Length: 195
Image (cartoon, rainbow, N blue to C red; front, side, top):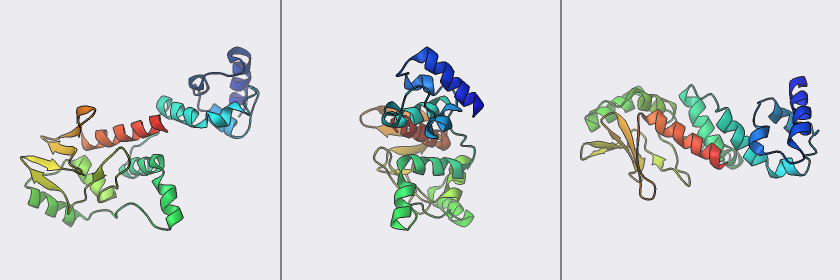
């Protein structure tokens, strides 16, 4: 708290009355201080209007640690706002984890071994609902193979081909992700930037 207060006081003298959001995101200690109402910059009117931009700038400067699949999926759902909406409806929006038997059955049906990161995703949740900018990720029972690639999403814009995940966007073009996890981390990053 003392560090945050010191930083805010220093910035109050250097940045003037309406500092840039990216400047405020220069240290993690500032966010809790601003939320708690520390206001040596006189930001009472400005800070609430720029809260979303400040949070996005903090996420970009200090990406959340998403080491595990449950953390990554939870962050995606938090950024989408689905978790809060689901709580209000009194039900979850995530499918339950897939069993090892269901994953193996899907692999036998498809004739391929799924990459380990995709298997880990399925062990976390057997698919993922769509949002405005990302397709519905298919669960084990819905995965299908066409023309040598595995369809991972509906609509079929996320494909598994030769251990890479190919994202086909009719507007933005095609992106090749090195892994399934990389595609979802990119989705989380875009959600954070849009937030």
